[in-house]
Length: 197
Image 1 (tube, one colour):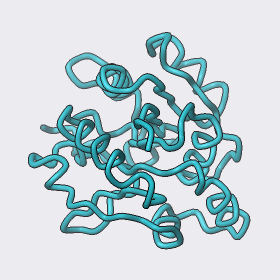
Image 2 (cartoon, helix red, strand yellow):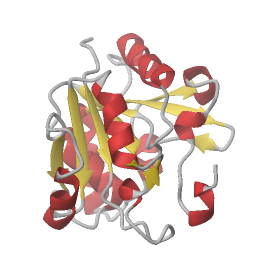
Image 3 (cartoon, one colour):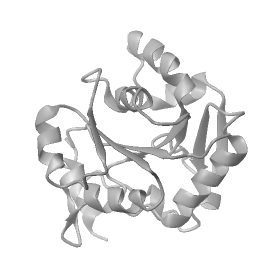
Image 4 (cartoon, one colour):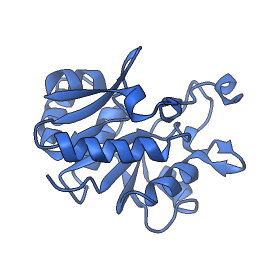
């Protein structure tokens, strides 16, 4: 199996619960998306950010490093599953790690461990999904490009839950705590009160 060189950050949501675009929220005076992509550039040669439209892309272009590729949803309004569909059609390799834009605390250890899991399991799994006490972390997972057709079929039936995708393919479960013993990589920010660290 080849190396895992691609990573896609899904950032097309409207942040309704938060009240604003979550990728633009600040931590230590830096937007979440800048924090996340800066860390990813240290581990991946192909870093993508999937956004909802060209207006959002214009805003992000001024923030992101020039090495980050910006994509806009090919299937607007399809949620995170639509973002996965878009990214899988544009990655440079056989698979990509996916992350949400509201997880700025992703650790180097998590990224290294996911790449190692892909080296060991990438040939035999369509997805490598961290699993915690509360169930799967489908937006912190590796998906093979070969599942793009399955994603398209699910979306054509108006099935938009990423959980439905991992139930429909050969998903390998990995204990989240083994990937990041601190579990900080899985901490996301959905509401204003979550920003109190």
